[in-house]
Image (cartoon, rainbow, N blue to C red; front, side, top):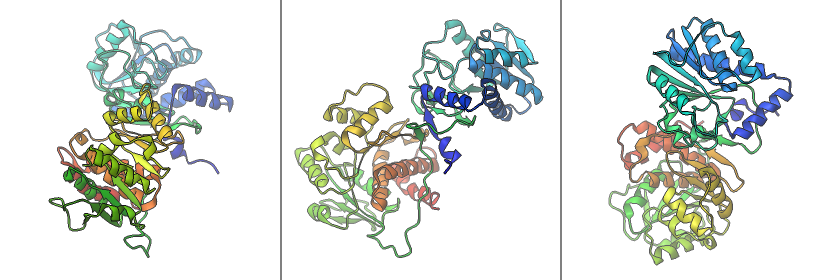
Length: 469
C-alpha cells in the first residue's frame, strides 16, 4: 500500500538522510537539473506570494543552494516581478552553472546599495558546518536589514542544519524559511528556530526515509463509544503532595482532556477544587483500585523521603503512569517495573534524570532524549521552546514552536494532567504524549497573551473539541 504523502512530508531529516533521499530520486531517473527546477520553482511560488508585485533581491552562493536562487530569480522574472541577483560567489557546481546561464534578468554587484520589498537568502544551504566568511556575513546582514521581508531558502545561511547551532553571531531574523524537500532538525531546534519566522515546505518528491524523525501533527480523537461509562472512558488517579496548587492545576486539565473520571488522593480538599473532582484521603485505596486506568504523580509532590516512598509505591502498582515535576527528581531506575510510562522533564529535571540513569548528558538535545527513553524504557517529553518526544524504539517527534506565553508557572502541571487523561483513555504512552503536547500548545494558542495556568487548563477542552473526528 503506498504511503500517505502527508506522512512523508512530516519527516525531519539530517543532512546525510536528505542527501541519500536526493540520491534515491536521481537513481530513479530524476536529474539534478530537474530537482533544482522543482525546488527553485516551488520556492519561487512562495516568494511570489509574499512579494506580490514587489521587488525581490536574491543572494546566490556558489553551490546548489545558490543554484536554487538562480531558478527562483528566473521564475519571478517570468511572472513579472522586478528581480535582481547578487552573485556572492560564482557557481561552482554544474547544475548551478546551468541555471545561471538560463537566468535572463539583472545581476548587480555585492557592493551596490540595494533596498526593496523581499530579500531571498540562497547563500548556503543545509550542508554548512563552518562560519560564514566575514565579508559574506556582513553582506547577508546588510541585505536583510534593507528589505521589508526576508526569506531564507532551506536553512538560513550561518545555521548548522543538524543541530540548529548558529555558526556566526548576529545573524538575521527571517520572515519565512522555506524547507526544500523535507524538514531539517534546525527548523525545530533552538536557538535557530526562533529566528526562522513562518515555516513552509516545498515538496520535491522525496520518499519516506527509514528511521527519520517526524513533526508532531494534529491528532484525531474519537468520541467515547455509544455504550461508554465513566470507568470505560478512563479513570485517572492523581497523587497529591505538599503543594496542592500544582496538583489541582493538573486535575483541572485532566478533567477537560477526555478521561471519564478524575480522582485526587490528598489529605485535604484543595481550596478551589471543582465539584467534578473526586478527592480522597486514602492514597492506598486509590493505588489499589483495579478500575484505575492511569496515574499521575509529581505535581506538588515534594522531595522528602516520604514523597520518595510514595512514588515507589505508585509505580509498584504497574499502572500506566505520567511522572512529572518532583517525581522526576526522585525517580530511580529500580522504581520502574515495565508499565507504560511518560516522563515529562524540563531541562533541569532532564539533567537529574540523566544523572540517575547513568547518562552523560552530552550531545544534541534529541540524542539525549532518545538516550533517556531507551535507558528508562519510557516515553520522554522533553519540554521547552523546542519540545521533543522520544520513544524507547528510537522514534523522535519534534513539536512545532508553541506560544512563548507558555513560559509561566503551572503550565507544566497542565501538560502533565492532559497527558495523564489521554493515557487513561487508551493506555498508549507515545500516543498520549503526542495528543497531550498538541492539546497543550493549541490551548495556549487559544488563550492568546498573558494567560494563567488555570486559564490554560480550561482551554484544553476547546482544543480537544477541535480534534474530535
